[in-house]
Length: 309
Image (cartoon, rainbow, N blue to C red; front, side, top):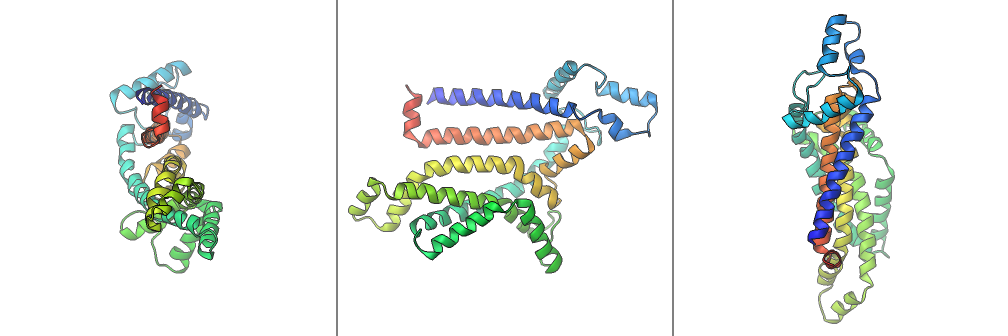
């Protein structure tokens, strides 16, 4: 088990370093930000001062090492636009993003797993088929299409719910639903498939032969064994949600989180904010995947035995 943990942590470090390098190179390829941001409203002398200050006149390798050194001061450079430390700007957006991401995950777990179990147990009934039809529909509709449809319906035509910002509890309803919709659909399908794999196993028939109640057979033995597969899927889906889903949803609903910050920084070519924002999201994804991998090893005895050899 210790060997598996060390290999997982090593992969995490290597992956994070590769992401840092790719983010730096990708932002450098888009051009000089001083020309885009300042335009003709600055004198040539002031322009040269800013270029030297941000080290844009130096070779790419020098800029890369300066980019790495910026991690050592805890501020990660200065924003081109706001002229304040990047770490402060990104830190202000983390909590709003968590306020949206955590409820979406809780809603997903509360809805998807029970419906997936029901769809597997009642697979030959109309309710099980209806659940799967709903899952396929939710999986097929992109979140930005669903977001626009809900905004038009509940925000414009019916005027029931607010669609921008996070001032009240009502502001959370639409973005939380949109963010969790695709994840609910995917997790329902995986839960149903995982349950179908274990419902016909010998240990399930043995549990019924012992006279255990059907509820205990399904939940304790069936879901308990299917939970290993469901755990890995949940980790991957949450990582994808943190990496991509929140960017689209936050931008559409003007939610002041990291996703909206990344979009605005990319449009304005605020390289330091964009770089550190992407790295922050990537780090969160790596942590989620690493935690999922370690949790999978803890709950699956086969991996523990394999790691100990």
